[in-house]
Length: 287
Image (tube, rainbow, N blue to C red; front, side, top):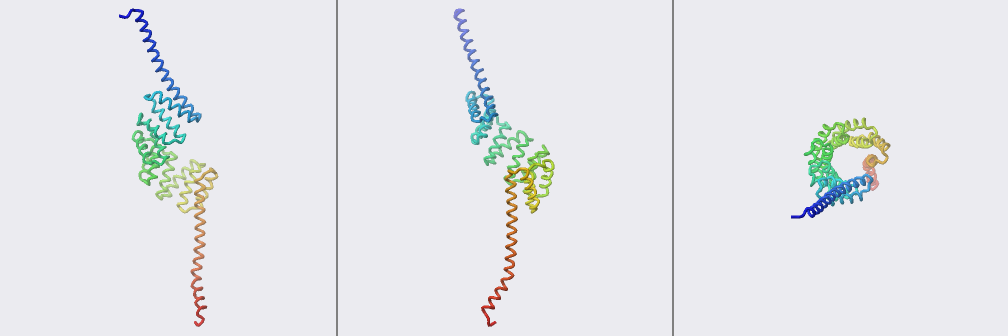
């Protein structure tokens, strides 16, 4: 049996150790939070390398913390901004291992897959989002875009229509549907959508380029050039406008040259028999 005083000393030591452990846990949790908050501040200041380092420190400090899905997601965001797409995908994947149904993380990983040309992987992630949230407009829009790349116009139309049922005024959904109508040679339907968009967004250079492209397909080159001039006025750095205008002008010049060449050939074909007869007569004076 331990004497009273000795017992009290042991008790004090035990309480001190317990307090030390609790303090250590508290400081650890606080440090994890501080590192996370500092990382967010660094992202706001565009100090991305420092933010990445802070997030990795926090993850190393508490590898089993329930909030690590958020930290891995933020790490993926930082790495994406740094242009390290493979690392970003890996970080998002770690986040999804912790929170497999996290829609924002699925959308972020899908976006990188799409940027890297991995359409099939992006498609899987967008489908997973739709399984969780059937009204997610971003997933519907991007899945429709993938269908367009695959030339699956039926699938694209279904997603665009579903998107516009949820959000009838969705700009990208309407522009995407106009592009689909154009792809299926439904030029009048495409123009109707673009004309309505231009009523709502009269200063949008992208819409003028899109309408010019449809007009070009309809052989209305003069109207297309007018729209492209307006697009360039609104957005002087619009590469698409310059490329499309250059393409139309080049084709028109080539067509003019072909017409002139055809006329010359026609004249030559008409004159050739006469010239041949004269040559024959000159070679055969007896006749």
